Image (cartoon, rainbow, N blue to C red; front, side):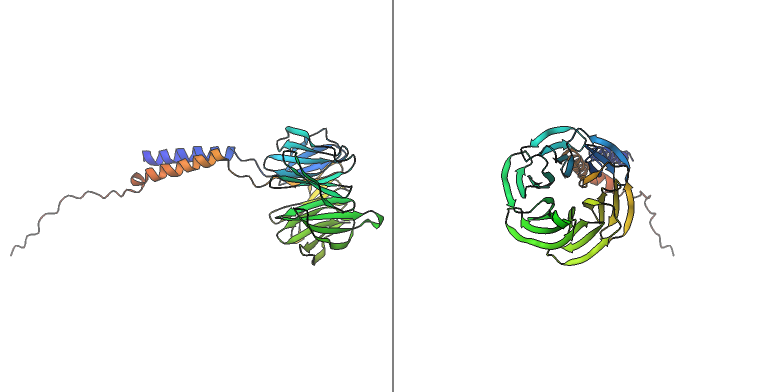
Amino acid sequence: MKTTNKIFRTALALTCSLAATLKAQDIYVSNTQGYTIGEYGMDGSTVNASLISGLHDPNGLAISGNDVFIANYNTGTIGEYTTSGATVNATLIQGLGINSVSDVAVSGNDLFVVTDTGTIGEYTTSGSTVNASLITGPVDADNIAISGNNLFAISEYVPGYVGVVGAYTTSGATLNATLLTGLYYPYGIAISGNDLFISTDGGIAEYTTSGSTINASLISGLDGPCDIAISGNDLFVVNNGNGTVGEYTISGSTVNASLITGLTNPVGIAISPVPEPSTLALAGLGGLSWLLFRLRPQIFAVKHPVHPPKKPVRNCQ
C-alpha cells in the first residue's frame, strides 16, 4: 500500500508540473483602427482585448512558438512580441516602405513579408535579410500562406478589384503565377492539406492547391471577410465589416458566426499552435517511467496465501 501511494503522489506531482508548463491554444486578432492585438480563447472568451498596444495599423500576423510577428502597415515594419504580450523587438524588420506591409508568414526559422510594392521578401526570425526581393511581380499583394515548400500569394488588381492567386516555392521559383484567376475582391488565404480557402467579397471559396475549384461559395453572407485561420477542422474568419470573428467547419457549416465580437476594424488573425510539453515536464514523465520500472517487482509481486500443511492421508482399512 505504501508503495502504491508513493507512486500516485509522484504521478500527481508530475502531472501538475506538466499542466503548469502548457499555455492554452488562443486566437490573436489585429485591430487596425484600435492599433492593438487582442487575445481570445478558442471558445471566443476574451483573454486580453489589448494584449499588445501602440502598434501602427497592424495587419497580418504570424505565430512561431511563443512569439508573435506583426506587420505594421503604416510604418513598414515587422514587430516581434511574445504570446503573453511582452515586446521582444518592435522594429525587428524595418525600412520596408511606408503604408506597404500587409502580411507576414513564418516557415521554420524564416519570415516571409508581403508588401504592396509587388515583392515578397525573406528574412530570418532574428530579423536578418535573406532576400528582400525573393518574389517580385505580384501587383498589390495582400496575403500569403505557406505549406511545406510552397507559397501561395493573393494579388488584388485594384481596377475592378479582381485578383489572382499565384503559386511559388519558398526559394522564390514561380510555379504558376496565375494559379487562380477572376477572384472578386480576394484577401485572406489559408491552407488545410491540399485545399486552399480564400476570402472573397462576402464569402469563402475553396480550391485545391493545384487550382481546381471545389466550392466557389463554400461560405456566404459574410461582412467584409479578411484574414482566415485554420485549427483542426475549423475555419476562423475575420469580418472587417461588423467587427467579428466567425467560426465554421472546413465543410462550410456554421459553428458560431459571432464567436468574437466588438472588434475595431479587424484584419489579421492567427492561432497559437497546440501546446507541447516543456523539456522539464518531459524529463519529469521520464523520471516517473524510470520509477515505475524500478518498483515493478514490488508493484506486480504476487503474494501467495500461506496454508497450513496438509495432514497425511491414511488409508486405514
